[in-house]
Length: 122
Image 1 (tube, one colour):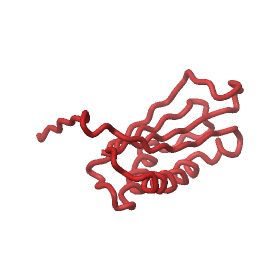
Image 2 (cartoon, one colour; image 1 turned 120 degrees about the vertical axis):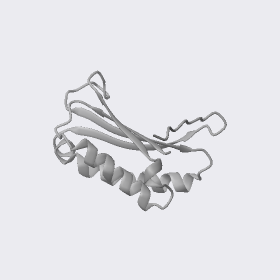
Image 3 (cartoon, helix red, strand yellow; image 1 turned 90 degrees about the vertical axis):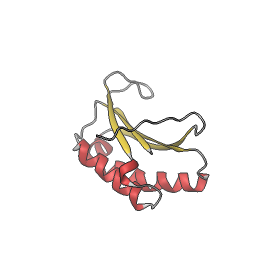
Image 4 (cartoon, helix red, strand yellow; image 1 turned 135 degrees about the vertical axis):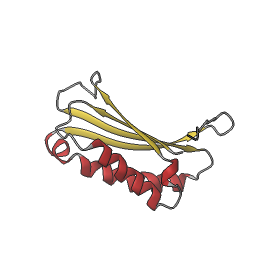
């Protein structure tokens, strides 16, 4: 934990090195001192069917949802968003320049009483 779910529309002008982008997001989270890299899990989901605002073809999105165990203060969550947003913006320079691109970060809570995890040890 945390779980990082990066979603993006498939009409972006940039095609970042997705594994490198995830590594940079991990590095940013570790640098906060709140998480160990071994506990961070990330994935990218590309959307071919989507609509942003009026549906114009120059509208695109990149959104990162970072799910953390509940109990973190709003200030801590805001600081996490502030640290992660510039990483995403830097990853999509052509899209930011040539499109109406929405880049968002959200820190959401995992429900501690119902969260379960099984981790195998080979």
